[in-house]
Amino acid sequence: MEYAIETFSLTKVFSDWWGRDRVRAVVDLNLKISHNEVFGLLGPNGSGKTTTIKMLLGLLHPTKGKALILGGDGTDPKITSRIGFLPEESYLYRYLNARETLDFYGRLFGLSTKLRKMRIEALLDMVGLKAVANRPVGTFSKGMARRIGLAQALINDPDLLILDEPTTGLDPIGTRQIKDLIIQLAKRGKTVLLCSHLLADVEDVCDRIAILYSGKIQAEGKVKSLLQQTHKTQIITENISDTTLEKIKQLVEAEQADCEITAPMDKLETFFIKTVIAAQKQAETTSGAVSTTQIGDFLTSEYIEQSILDKLVSTPVSEPAETISTEKTAPIETAQPKPNEKVLHELTTPAKPETKDPDEKIETQPVEQITPQPDNINENVLDQLTDSETTQDKNNTQQNDNPQAGEQGDA
Image 1 (cartoon, rainbow, N blue to C red):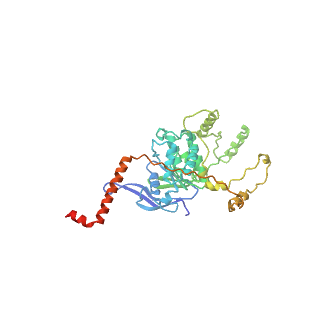
Image 2: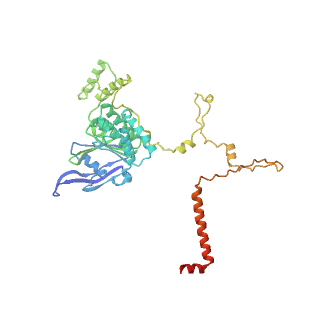
Image 3: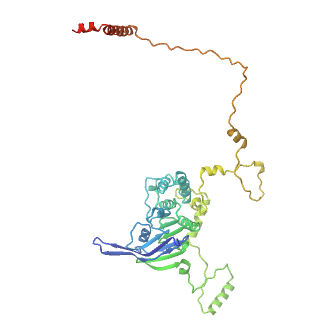
């Protein structure tokens, strides 16, 4: 699997009711996106970006060509379980709160209860929504909805993350946070496909970009190589004297080149973030999202899930407080705790029968037997029943002893 995403002459043509070709959304698209790369798919509205993403995910069937994603088909459940997708519009159940929303998507991926709880809390803290986790998402602003949408795209710890306009509606701090998160995910082994109209964001995070127009690639390559002006030179230095500046101008004019000397400027985004951070240091309260720079531990490549039994077995024995020292010492390999041999011997040794002295007399106390008292019975009725049964038995006995008398009686 050389590439995370690879397309071969991918084409999508939308037809009208009569089957005639009306819109050629994507035409002979050939993309190759490597692993651990942040790739930007750019273009104006209607250039085919969203259509390309839908064909990669198997939501649209291509008219011609083929797309491979993570070495397989985008409709294969084994492949889709490794993909995180944030659509242009977040489709969320408005009556569920943030925590219930993430739990719902975690159940769709078949995550265990313990794993869901751990990841939900980590993601809520990462996107800055932990303080409003119990609010229904229908009451969220658009920027907060994008934050919870990004969290649901990461709930399954995907290998490939597809983001369609991830920073739409976010404030500058949230935008900066998402960009930093994308960079960290790429460093930790994730592949990111990013679609955005905010070109400054793409410039900050993408390794390579492709610009689409009319469904075709018009330009493709590394961001630095596409934007760098090789016919110009820029020199940035500390404050220098006017005499030195005049000498520099004379040297540049001797080369018959134009020279412009100005002070460098910060980006408005940088100035905005500095101002807000200063306000946060003054403990100003807010009812919205909180900016954080943390990333969930489960998104790291070194994360290994341990069972409860493994944690119990590998728990080191705590040392007395007197032995703790602040001096740096060489690391000591901790051994597995050994079972108590005395307790183990007592548990495994069979019990011995008790020995008794044969001359010892055992005194026993007599046991009182309790005779159950009969219930109160109506004696008259009992006598009648007994007498009737006795009389009938006597008659039957007489008939058996004198069969002739019985025959005469019958006659």
